[in-house]
Image (cartoon, rainbow, N blue to C red; front, top):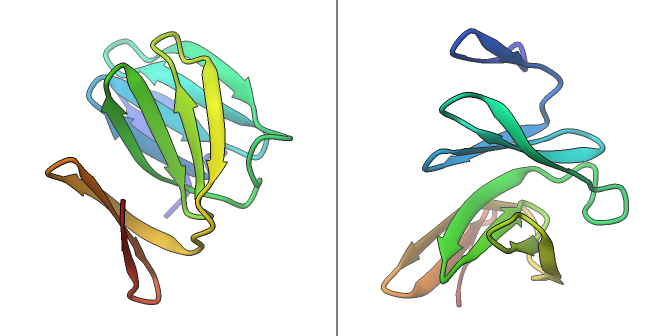
Length: 120
């Protein structure tokens, strides 16, 4: 409600969206995506997103498979990262208003706020 998250008495202010995967916390604000180790809240990496993804987009899902980290936004932007969190690629899925992403039996299901589900 207050756009404030508390983890181990650490405050993460000015957060557009935040997402977790295992021991990784990913936070997005207007200009950066920041990766934190959730065990000690140390900043692992900070990436400027000014020319990478829309400032208005929100993080929806973080998946890890075959040494690749996949970061999805609600605007259909998909970022690929290697183990060191270097950007490998960016893809526009051309799907907007994503509200849920899940994977099942090696397939990715992307649902939108209009009730449409895409399967990859």
